[in-house]
Amino acid sequence: MSFVDGPLSQRLKLVHGSGAVAFGVKDSGFSFFLLPFYNLVLGVDAGVVGAALATALVVDALVDPLIGHLSDRTYTRWGRRLPWLYVAPWPLALLWTVLWSPPFTGTPGFWEIVALAVGVRLLLSACEVPSVSLVPEITDDYDERTTLFRYRFLSGWIGGLLMMVLAFTIFLPTPEAQLQPEGYAQFGLFGAGLMVLAVIGSAAAQHRIVAQLPAHRPPPFSLRGAFAEIFDAFREKAFVIFALGGLAAYVLQGMTFSITQYVNLYVWQFSELAFRLYPVVLFFSVVLMFVIVGPLHRAWGKPKSAAVAAIVGLTFYCLPYMLLLAGAWPTTGTTASTALLYVFLICANTASVVSIISATSMVAEIVEAFEERTGKRAEGTFYSGNWLVQKCATGGGILLTSLIVQSIDLAPGTPQSQVTQETVTQLVVLFVAAASMLGLIAAFWLGRFPITREQHEARVAARRASDPEFPKAIDDAVRADPDGHTITP
Image (cartoon, rainbow, N blue to C red):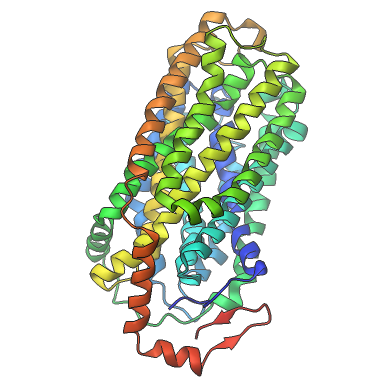
């Protein structure tokens, strides 16, 4: 049964969500700054960076599901997830620091970038997969799960946007500073400390609720058995449909984020003030998401919310570029251009995050569908699959951006004033074409996710009815904690 029966307290929502700050730090770094840092600052060819990150995903594809599987099978008096959350942040912080201060002489090579990317990604998996796997364990309520994901996404965005604000105001305050390595080293050091604080702080704050000996001791681990269970889980129809839609949505987000520095600098001709306001605009859009996603899920359910939001987000992302090509946009670099772009960006990012959070929340319902079919709980396995989809998408999005940058022949370190109109047009056309294709694929598959609210609630009711211990636990053994939770032993 779930750890908490009934409504979740505000404190639990906050402390659980705060663990996602580490993901936000990583996502901001990889999506917005990693490619420009290695390409424009260290002089690595954009194609090499994209290929290195794509190669790292091959290792992820093998190891990430094992992390989720091992998390599911961890058996301690602190439960299945907490030991991972207390150990993994420390080596993650070390490698994150090194990623932004490469210890190599000269320009980093392909395999050096691969090694750093693999290390950071796997260690972040060891933090994020156990943390997010707690969601279906904490509650089986359809709407409360959405609430926990709302707080996770809000916290993740706060972590990422905090790093952006610090980057554009302290670490990389000018377009010239964005082409120098010193600020990136400070960016990495601060982010490492924030990751440790977020993951361990969140785990410790939830310890009293989730530190429970698992109900069943898992059988001995074997590599063959592990992959057999993983393959069985990933064949779940609902997960396959989610993965098809989620992959397209995450690739679109990864490409949109990784190309941001290029389009803001070269297409929209951002000033220093515009760069500093950019994180504020994104944060406002995430606050809007936090307000509207719950009512949307209650009115439409998660699949329809995800599909409609994907189309709305795509429309608002692409429209400014289409107006620019048509000559119906204010002169770029002016206050009017930047202000109008920010209006479109707020609408686009709000809708896109609603689509992403709806897709992520769907995975929680796959857990009960799989349990109904096999009799096994596999939260960690499914969320490692979700995490793998996200990381593949981030790498795929960066790879797409690197291919776009390569195809327009944009030399490393090119100043804003020296980019030709032809180069800008090529950048815009390629970005809009790729974004349109990905957005439509995401909407098509996410709208076909087969698990509805009614089906999930029927599964939960059947599960409770078949558990002979549940009524006794509610009547005789349930105790209320100081925050007002009902904790089932």
